[in-house]
Structures are given as C-alpha cells and as structure tokens.
Length: 270
Image (cartoon, rainbow, N blue to C red):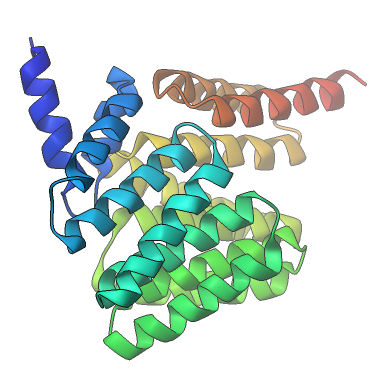
C-alpha cells in the first residue's frame, strides 16, 4: 500500500522527469491528483532555477490540457514556458513548448496558429537534430490536415513521421501516428490498409502498456468495423475503449466513444 508521503515523493519527482512520462500520467489517472501536481509545480517555481521553472510551466500547461481540458489556461502556461525558453536560451524546452502550444491551439480550433507552431517546431527540430520531436511535429501537422479534410496530405505527413520514429524509437508516437494514419486511410476508402495500421498501433500500445493509445485504437477500430457492417465486433471494440477511458478518468475519450456507439446503433437499427 502506497502512503501519502510516497505518493507526494512520486509526484514531485515526476514533475522533473523526462517528457517520456507515461508512468506519470497513468499513475495520476489512477490517483486523480492533478491539482496536487499543480500545487507542487507552484512551490517549485518559487524556489528553483530558471530551467526548472520552465519545466514546471510546461508541466502545468500539460495538466490543464490533458486532464482538466482547460485549453486557454494551458496556452497561457505554454506561452510562459516558450518565452522563458527563448530568453534562457533552452532550445530543447523551446521545442517542447512549441509542440505543446500547437497542440493546445489545435484543440481551440485555431488552425493557422497551430500550424505555425508546428512549422516552427519542425524548423527548430531540424536545426538541433531532434529527430523524435521532428516526427512529433510532422504527426501533428498530419492531424491538422486531417481536420481540414486534406486526407491525402495528412497521410503524407503521417508516413514521414512514422519513418523517422521507427528509426529512433518511441512507442507512444509510433502507436498514435499509425492509429491516425489508419483513420485517414478509412476516409480515403483504403480499409484494408487502415485496418493493418490501426491493428499494428493497437499491438504496440498493448506491448508498451499505453492504455490511452490502446483506447483510441479500439475506438477507431470500432469505426472501421461499423463501416464494414461488422456491428457485433464494432460494439465490442467501442465498449473495450469505453472501459479503458473510464479507468483513466478520461471524460473526453468517453464522450467520443459514446458518440460512436450512438452512431453504431443508429446505423444498425435504421
């Protein structure tokens, strides 16, 4: 049994951990201690060096975006982090801030602003030789084109991203990008290729124990199965995704799956 002090120590250490923070996010989802992380970040900001302050601002932005769905507040902390990273300078944190900021702006529907952030991130990643972040920027640019229904362009960006990430290795980015690639292939009517990519993403998510990505893979698999009129299998995939999102306290994911289930029921019984 983990006691309060051990939890506090874990959370405190996680704030300063590298950005490959799957364990951090998963454990916080179980505990629901997002507000505690925000408080600890605030404590650190008052007593740490400039680099750590920037890390804390980006962490706070991440909590507001990923767990509290407060995108305007996330933007404010990301902008603070970006400004601090440029002034220090700290190109690694500047790159992280650009990616985070672009993601938050995309959620707010500010497509052009988001794209500029990712383009700037791509340029900086090329400049400092950050291949993993380059792959991430390309993947995000694919998301934007997908949202604009430019599916062929989106596929091109995703394929560029996957090629890089398979060289340097990052299960989270690879799984998410393969999954998103599959979604766009569905839109282009390439269902067999879509299934292969989503299935591969699902396998990676399971092997690397990334429940968030696994849930989205199952949800998208359900969408594909619905299109193929495999209603029973689609229903099973949606419910498995819903169960994972419920376990993660991810309400946005739950809403997406419930909407997909509603669409399935409508198509099945109309």
